[in-house]
Length: 404
Image (cartoon, rainbow, N blue to C red; front, side, top):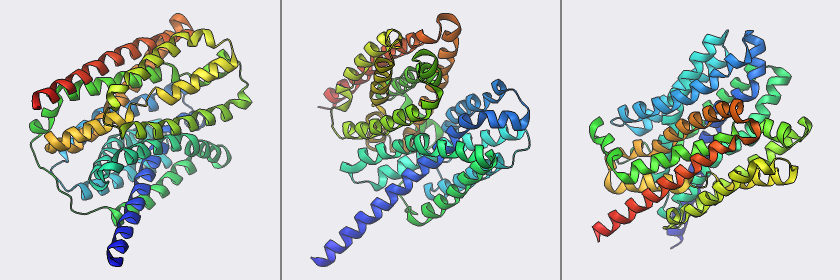
């Protein structure tokens, strides 16, 4: 009996260590993705390039991330997941280190394309390993913590990186991420199972999962949910200062509070995903999104009202993240095992498409209706998201009735 308890405790400890490493991977990827936004002025000054041109580093990263993830995950699925992940980590390290050594705008662009090409596939494989390693009752919690790793990077990693960039130079920021990448690589090599059960299949069979309405309604839900968020979040800084009237000195604290709310949102998303009817209850959150976004332009005249709505939106606007990720993983595991890695990448792929759509919409609306009213675009995308959520739930119920 004592021996059984000992091995059970060892297994639990190993799972906790694996979970922490998975969150560290998300933190590493988040720091690399988000840090450019914080150091754009420093890069612009270094390379003597207009900051508007430097901004394309962000746009192109998101587009390459979304497009390349599909091809990389599908084409590498026939190979060992363990070896594939470690190779992708090495390529990511090369790309990030090239960022630290960049001598001009073109070099920096190439380095960002390299990291974007691998980042989506790395997190997809991490999600797949999480699904394989985690007990069924802990899967949703682990997925939510992995998502939280990106929020933690935004709240803590990026401000630290900006401070390092300001004090010592932007190159040290990327060197720091490279150090974290090397540490993460070593930990992954030690704690990941080298052999996991996987189904090898043709590209056509892997993509067959996209023909399932429970999948394609879900990916459009992810896309328009991201567009809903970035339809206003893209201009969060001017919304806080220009529209609400907060001072620039208080901006860092406000962004910190919003970031903490984002971490809480990820944890609530995990709790929600643990319940079998999480997708059926999700429409209530989208109705709340629509109502809050509709009154947001009027609330901007008050600091308290505007900030309160911003915090509530941060809490609920992407609360679907963990439930939809678990939905994709469970569906692939039971009905499309040949597409498990690809299915785990769907949220990441279409969320980045949604970021591009939402930010482009916000940029267009600023010049047409003004900064205060850009949430109009988010209202439209929230309504579309709600429609796809109803279609998804209908497809799930229809399939369940057919099976019975």
